[in-house]
Length: 351
Image 1 (cartoon, rainbow, N blue to C red):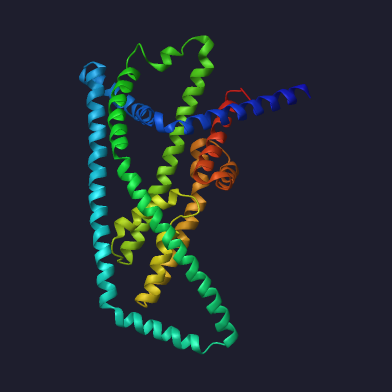
Image 2: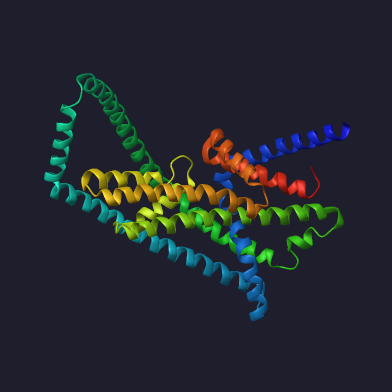
């Protein structure tokens, strides 16, 4: 009984400490973001830097400068190319919508006329109910549009205002990454050497396990998002849907967000092909593809995450569900991280 009480006390203490650290971390992220990003980049560049140091027989300062420069140059090129392509497709998409509406106004009018004929043949009671609900829908839609436009303008103003902050984050991240990489590849500053004392063996094991599991967690979600992007791009290419790249990218980004998901692209596209072009084949194909991609994601996510972290799939599903109910994406991060660190401490016999 005493052992059980001690174990419960340890778990409760772990939960309290973890929650405090989590809240402090995300509460101060605006001030520590460059250093957090730099630490992640330095951990990625550590092995390549050590390899260059050994192969080229140069000091770690020059090797760190090479790897940091190449790493950020690649990221800059990829981001620049992606932004240019996405911007071009977005502009072309906006232009073509205007051209389509002006060029197909007769078809749109015919569709509305057919809908009106069907509407007039309905029972008067049903018509009255539809009119009431439709009026409420229009009122909500107009309020939503006004709210959305206001938030969009506010977001754009805030985005312009944060450009100096973003530039400062990029500059500090670049410089800090170099120094972190240099220190991590130095024999004097190696974390393993600093924690090699017998008294700090558990700290070293916690560090190694945390790095391994968090790395696996990020890698698993990158695999899931990449799979969603490839599946969507393949589906849109098969149906010859324009702007497949930009739409697939939006789907991949939306796939990260709770509740929103890929339906934000698939469902409107299906409705467009149903009502605007009367292309029932593509509409049905998009709906089936949406269901298949969603089902595949729901099946593979727990398996990939659980296999990479060594956690039971039910624990992953519970973390996702509870996290969404608590506070959306941040709640998911909190619960998944809680499960990860709990598993780490349990492996080390500390809980």
